[in-house]
Image 1 (cartoon, rainbow, N blue to C red):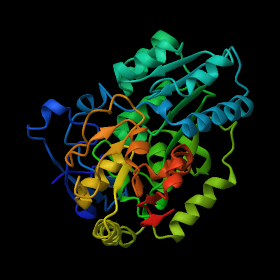
Image 2 (image 1 turned 180 degrees about the vertical axis):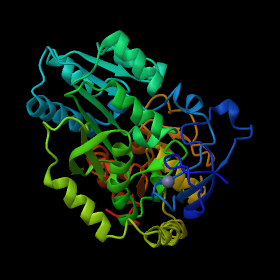
Image 3 (image 1 turned 120 degrees about the horizontal axis):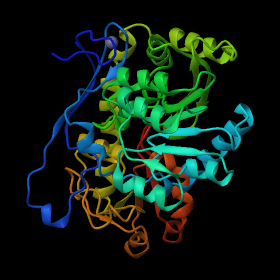
Length: 408
Ligand SMILES: [Zn+2]
């Protein structure tokens, strides 16, 4: 039996069991096609005591994140989202060239580059050396390491304390959430602000986003649980935004509990109440999700079987982590999908983990003239439907699998 990574209570209650799945970033090279692949249980639990939804840690983060295939800058809408965030943060927190901004999991500098343009000093903290190298090449100072209490101590000594400390889509990836949040507490300047964005569990459940559950995402946060974890480490969440990104995210704003200069806004109590009204503080609320995932799978398979019976050609768009969960859980291989495409050249020429679907360059869709393009990163469906809109020339249609199968 394993225990909650926040409160250490034994984990007994299943949130959803998605069977066995390979790690989502282990794309298969052609010379590996005849080899075995490790599969791990993709079984999420909810803690009976604190309601943190979580996966067991099967693979150490340095095996997952030291060479990472995900470059944030490949998504133009995500880069634009980040640019708007930077404008907001500079105005709201009065940042200037005397300030210091640090980002945890700064990836390829997709966000910090906008601070650099405004001559505001930055430091990126990124564990994947190949991704950090891309950031450094575009002029974003980046240190290659994982974040936690030890790194926080080093950073205080080497770089001082940040006025703004941010991390987007990293909290879920942290195996030791206590060490991570305690590290932020240690690092932050006395009057500093933390912002973090992460997918919102309430939206994941409301919109059947079971495919966002994969081994790299150790935890899935409601607002009430995030608030509890931050409070435990002496940090107060004083504002929260609900964002449309990644299928519905929260952006929390936190500060030292001792810093009364930033009063807690009405958004905090309102969201806490909304989640409480929605049952997020009762175990029963979490028990029905497995059935939702099964129903979504049946609808997608029914569509694919019917399309193939009618002789239609289907290709995929994207090879994201969520695509790996969806394809493996639903058992979708080249029997349904001829190939998928991805703008990330690191993935092109490889095969999707487990399901072994070829990953090609995006322009191959034009040659193949498929009847349907299944959009795997459905959070980017508008951007993709615009970029690949030319499939309309031959009557091609887009298919979005989540929250339930929809033909556009
Ligand atoms: Zn717990």
